[in-house]
Image (cartoon, rainbow, N blue to C red; front, side, top):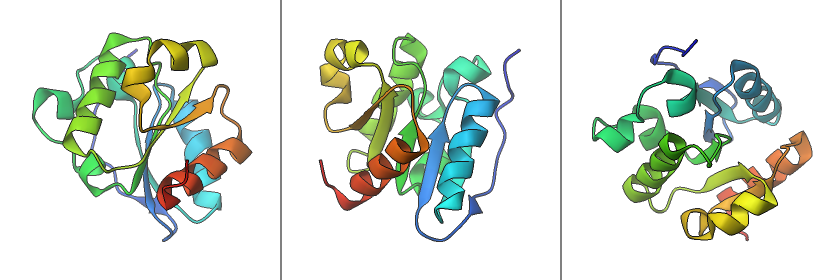
Length: 142
């Protein structure tokens, strides 16, 4: 069953604000817990895949979380065209915003143009790889 889009507040620490995009509630919760444990503030989004609706940025409606974020963790399937549209809209709206993308090696090769400039973490996302990628993205280190 699709989740509802709702307004959430940033939860967690003071290091930086991380928008966590993952379709499954459990995945978002795990990613947010790891990030909050490291001092980051997070807010979650189920994305088009999880809500059954187009991304607000893609529709032109705007997204407060995306506009306030210091970094985004995009753990949505980039093989889903709705999620890919959301990623493209995010990159278009905030071209300098660091984006960490969880993707398989095969998807990384297939979607090289869409993932250019992103910090790609090979799936499955582990806490260590997640934190390393977020820290590198915030520092601008490839």
